[in-house]
Length: 72
Image (tube, rainbow, N blue to C red; front, top):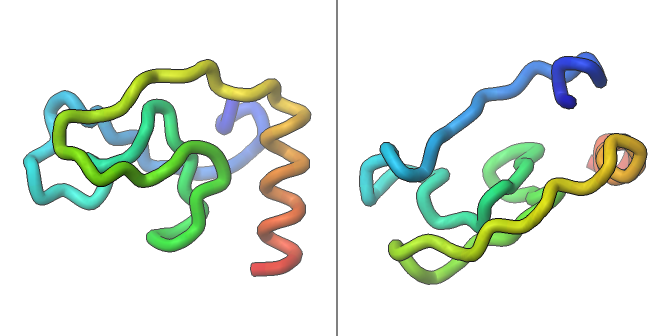
């Protein structure tokens, strides 16, 4: 979906990330604008991981990104 929208991104597989990896402690999936801004998903306080959830529809992602990029 992010390719279709035209955004560059870095994908991280939490299963293979080291314990001290920045992306290890987020719900799955999570979309981060930067290290401080979660567009979708949340940071968790457990190294055990969090429940997975369905990614929102493309239109919702575009609306979230537009709102954040304009403010950010």
